[in-house]
Length: 217
Image (cartoon, rainbow, N blue to C red):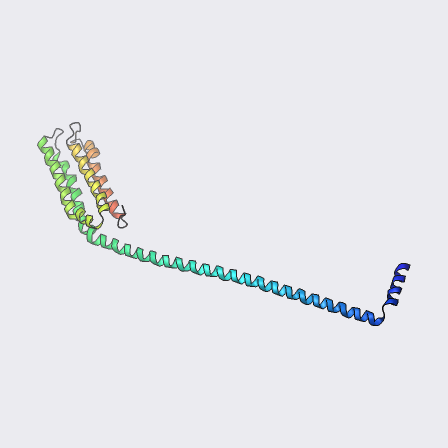
C-alpha cells in the first residue's frame, strides 16, 4: 500500500494536470479511431458477405427458373405427343377395328361350328380335309378384311395378331388329323379345339384393347 501511494505520488509529481488532460484526449482519439476502423471493417465484411449471399441467391434463382422452363417445355412436348397419340388411336379404332368387329366375331363363330362336322371318332380323310380347308378359308377371309389393312398401319402389331391366328389354325389342324384323339367326345373336343378357339379370341381382343400406338419393333 505504501508503494502504491509513493508510485501515485511520483506519477502525480511527474505529470501536471494539463499533461493528464492531453493524455486523456489522445487516448480518447485513439479509441475513437479504433472504433471507426472496427466499424468500417464490420461494414465492409458485412457488405461483402451480403453481396456473396445475394449472388448465390440470384444464381440459384436463375437455375431454378431455367429448370422450371425446361420442365415446362418438356411437359408441353409430352402433352402434344400424347394428344397426337390419342388422336391416332381414335382413328385406329374407328377406321380399322370397329368396321372389322363383325368379321372377327364371324370368324370365331364359324370355327366354333366345326364341332357339328365331327360326328364320329374316326372321320374319313376327306372329311378332315374339308374341315381343314374350311378353317383356312375363314382365316383368309379375315386376313383380307382386317389383317391386311392393319399391315398398312402397324406391321409389327399385325404380325402379332396373325401369329395368334396362325397358331390357332395349326392347333385345330393337328387335332383334326390326329388318329389318337376322339374329337366326338365333348371333353376331348373342348380340350384340343374348343378351348383353343376361346383362348385365341380372348387374346386377340386383349391385344386390340391394350394397343397403345405404333410399335417400334
